[in-house]
Image (cartoon, rainbow over all chains, first blue to last red; front, side, top):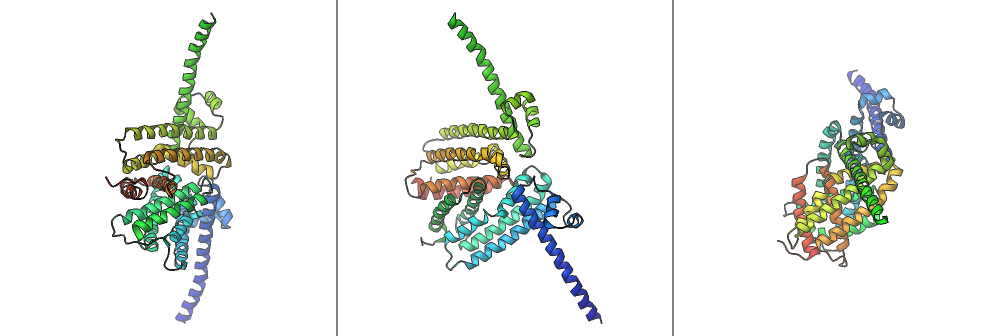
Length: 210
Length: 210
């Protein structure tokens, strides 16, 4: 009987947990969409609950403030996109070329998650409460992207200057991502990453030109 | 008589023109200060006229809308800062080291003009009217900073890949500028620019390590 009751409770709970998880995901995805479409100042909790099809009460239960919502949304999408980035890297034919890895990073930093994060960064600059949440998130995301880049590029970080060149690569793609929010910048970006790959191969990865 | 009347008109006009120019400069500088302190959404024409000590009527005469004001302000400060950058470069002991030039560029992209421009770029992304003004300004500024960087670094842009490496350098400092708005990033930035100067000297400027 105990086992049977336990199993019943288990069956009852799992769908509820799944529904909750799906509802949270809808809220977070709607938030990212609105950050991309309307910017931070044009995003409101009312618009998010409407777009996600979630009641105001349920939304406020999970995310009491707009800041809670936007920070969780960018964190969520960063995890999703980080996993996508790792999966795309795993699909690259071995040995991975530096240029192909730079392409993945360039795509990552011109994707909606970058745009949404940019809205958050800029809003946080003049909003101490938001900064208190965005600062640690940005550090965590930065460490994770750095670790992944080192792995994808196949870099030995103990070599002198290697760490700084990986950081420079990430600052470069961040700068390219920012430029891309003003104009469609693909051709210029491609030419720059072509050249950057040669620099990295000559100074860092020990690979020769393909 | 004609000459004397002309001279009198001239004397009368010059102070008026100077007063107008000074008033416009106060409005533009107050706008940049507010963009840096409160962001785009926290900047209003009312706050600007209060801070500049200029009547609402005079402000509206010169800059009818908030968008007119913020675009003119960033353009004005970009000219001022561009002149400061060129002057600082002229003061560098000859021959200019690549590292010293990167320091000037790094300072430029972490200065208030970068922060104010960032507020404008991000706001323009979701505001078509503002984008119509910011897009051309950004192109003009980009060309000017590129030209100055080529000159300061002493690069021969006809060499294969040289143009892309100068562009990469500017995207790198733009990325460093963006990172610096979240955390004080000076130590990391210095180490990256140290390393990048070595790369540029090895591949581009033909200079050897100092």
